[in-house]
Image (cartoon, rainbow, N blue to C red; front, side, top):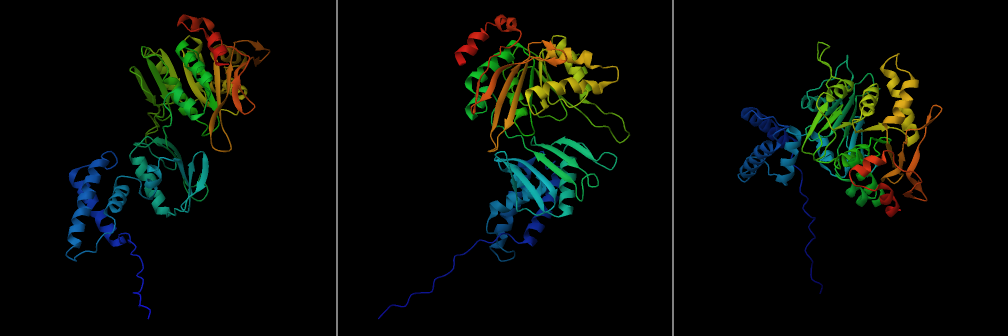
Length: 426
């Protein structure tokens, strides 16, 4: 006779905390933050401490049956902290180290970039949530957006770069981009380990920075220009004084004598704006040994060229599709500075000021690679600046070209035989 088997019980699934519980604890946490006078986005550990205490107290009360129990107290604490001190539903994406960028096309179209590739998330927001998120983010930056100024660039407390285009300029909804600064490399040797460039190219670029060559880092969006700029800057000798100028703070490297400057938008009265061009000019009064400009987009290119042409070593980034197009763009942007600036002055100045162009590209698989290192020897053929490939992409890899860098005397001055260095690497 077969024994009767007891019925199989379904597994118990832990349910998330109810909306009523979360809403009540959220309100209590906000009240506690106000009571202690905390800045929630700058004092996150204190907010987490308060949230942990509130959830623990709720858990103890649930033992008496007065309030419903919480299945996962740690998850509830994380949600409360994200609501009060973070950026709500976006916070898990911002905390994910593999996510490089988050952007909102509309409340129901939230995308991320991961490993250089785009993904549509299943996150669905409301229009009110997007508006509240933008207001909360801008409150932490001191910058504003309104009908008179429908664009804004800002840096969030965690170091992420925020860009917002107001509804009306963007169709249907406000467009929001949050670009995370995912630190994967801080030195050229680490870029070599990641496969962004070869050991030979890494040694050459480090020697070029130490020798004081002027370097232009180029590439498309998300090609890794800022990371490359940071790694190049990390090779600057510690005894030199570095001044950097950016629209928002993105340059990060360790140096004992470094002053970082960023732009400022105009106030409500329409005054007080500080442009990138102003920062480049002011930096020359601060006794710099090196000048770094985060990204050159407009007439500030003229002021940078004048500084480089006067013997001040520097480096910057620029959007371009190739090293050759970058030099053409560097000759065009200074013309925006005024009608009295002509190509007859600008083109020879670019040829005499820029020493190296390092061009990066994002391959279809999402990998960022250096595909060109071009030397600018200072010669011209008509209105065309001559170049020599020091390294070039050939047969699927970065290979040694035929070119040599300019200013060989500067390498010799610091005891580097750059010709031998390149030959050994080859």
